[in-house]
Length: 114
Length: 142
Image (cartoon, helix red, strand yellow):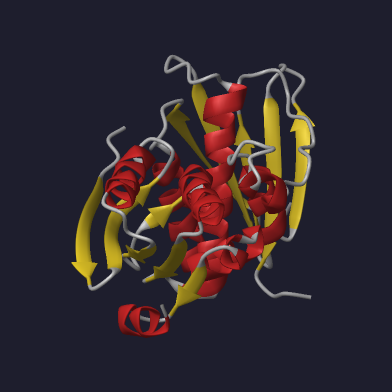
């Protein structure tokens, strides 16, 4: 079955913002990984993952974000997250992801705290 | 059981079809007036059980299907997700520290999420040889 995901990269100062909208799954996750690798290749050390609150995120998608958080820890790159619905904020917290990628209530709040 | 209503759906063993099962369960939960937060929990649990059935039970074989049975009772909704595989083992609890450290694969969260989000969960094998995850969500929390 077709799964769709839109990923786009923006820059704001030293921060790369990766916009993520749609189905965040093991199947589509490579688009997020590619965007992350792109900004890493450009020397960016601060990354904000901007989710759409209506996105569908499953365990395969969570694994992709854990992979990014693991790389961030290894390379001392700061990874932050915003835009998640309250349900997925809870899920990310339950799996322990928020210890490695802090969640912010808005893009502005995340950018102000980098 | 009196007052019990049963519905069934079969989805192909193709990733993405878990969303059809998820929406099926969510629409019934809405009719039962579950709170929105609990419906979101149910949606994730049903999606994860279907993904496990598709990937591990039916080994992504698109000629097989995953059965979704909803049983409505006055105070609870039961959901059985059945595959055509060889049964389900109780999974180990995933450890984020191990995964972040690269000592374990980053996947493996599905059963953990199901057990965390639903009120009752059982992993069983059927007499026909498949695996079934039996989940229950109560209308009112104890």
